[in-house]
Amino acid sequence: PMQSFAPSSRKPKKHRRREDFAATRNSSGGWVGKTSRGKMALWRVGVTAWVVAARALGFVTPGWRGRSGVEQMATIEAPAERVTPQWSPSSWRNFKIHQDIEYPDQAELEAVERQLAQCAPLVFAGEVRTLQEQLARATLGDGFVLMGGDCAESFDEFSVNNVRDTFRVILQMALTMTYGGGQPIVKIGRMAGQFAKPRSSMTETIDGLTLPAYRGDNVNGEEFTEAARTPDPRRMMRAYNQCAQTLNILRAFAVGGYADISRLHAWNLDFMERTKEGSMYRSLAWKIDESLRFMRAIGIDTTTAELTQTAFYTAHECLLLPYEQALTRQDSTTGRWYDCSAHMLWVGERTRQPGGAHFEFVRGVSNPLGVKISDKATPEDVLNILETLNPQNTPGRVTLVTRMGADKIREKLPPIVRAVRESGKPVLFISDPVHGNTYKTDSGYKTRNYDAIKAELTGFFDVMAQLGCHAGGVHLEMTGQDVTECVGGDVGEVTVDDLNQRYVTHCDPRLNGRQALSLAFEMAELMRERQGLPRMTSDSLPPLF
Image (cartoon, rainbow, N blue to C red):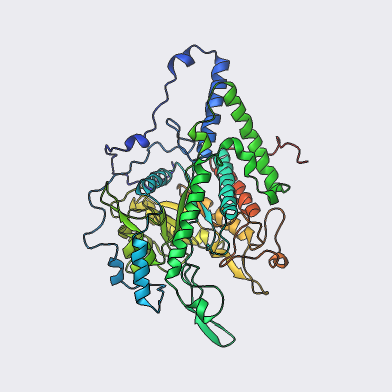
């Protein structure tokens, strides 16, 4: 049976939100009893199609457990005291700060922090709790996380169209993986806060001039001048204002009709219209459209919120601690602290030291937390991290994001998974197959190879399957734009010579929409393979022209 990382000795307790997780049997009583066997079969097909459609939009319907085989559903418990009394939103200031920013004007920094502390929260505690509930289900084997977005957001490239295009690629990917893999997809955008970036060197030297490294638009400017590279705390206010706009756009798209499953044909990006990936998606959309028509024909309402709206969350790396503290609020209903800059936060490889300032900050907030784990991590490191961040063993609290490289994943990941499994700690494992496969070309472009990304992702699925554990998700740097930043691809391959055509990233290379959607089909096939299902085909593909 699949290992769910739930503590085996822990019995579910009654809780005021347990009804959100209960998987009850759906009794259809009299209608079924009076129906012929043929009509009964049609009814089942219609209900199944409805559930597939609802799950594609991120909803879990009562009575539907999918094909994961997991019988136990997650119950989020609210411990009376999550953190030690010594924690406060500012206690991180007493610890060593890795990747610290040196602001030349401390008075101006403090003034910006006070201004941010008076601003409205970007997200709300109830939304954060809902995300943790969905992550708890995924931890127990009933769900798959799709996290994607820019390497680093920028002020100059911000637009409604760019936000929309990334959002709809994520919708396409989620629909593909839900239909193919039969699992609910938890959609999280690396958006509305993913500005700051860690650096291996705090300075950069060009032609004998040494200046501070570019640390993201909310810290300093990319232009190589002393004025631009000097950290400016006022950029945090500009970042906050852009985040508020981005979240407003995302919420409008998620619940305002854009995510309506009846519009799934309109989610295809223009530049993907005549590509193989676009054709594969159109074939899938056609099949789902047929199911929707059948549902309407037998009287099922396809205009409900479950089929016209979706749940969408945001996440970013917790790096710029003055910004994070300023947006931390105490929930009036529970008394618990939440970082209201995003629904989910993660700490990176360079800042995940349990004795450091970043861990001190995140251990006290009640947001779901991610931790990047590279090939350098040991089982002891990981268990120490889990004990620090999740002493109450709450499902959905911690997600381990593996980033080990295609050539190391099969060697380095198994000991960590075994150690976590044997500890009984509830953990969601997801794969970041991009960061460990970055290299620089002879022409100076930083890039990633699509085949290496796919190989690491396949290795992740294989390792988890071999150890009887749940492959819980994927974390991608991607965009809805037609960029040429990562080489390779199943069709329409980007070559090294193509990189200079549309290489516009402010930091690391991103998968374009075609590459991201192609990877979604690969993941759907991997999910089907592990469930013993046949591969998806394009037999029903309508004519392209």
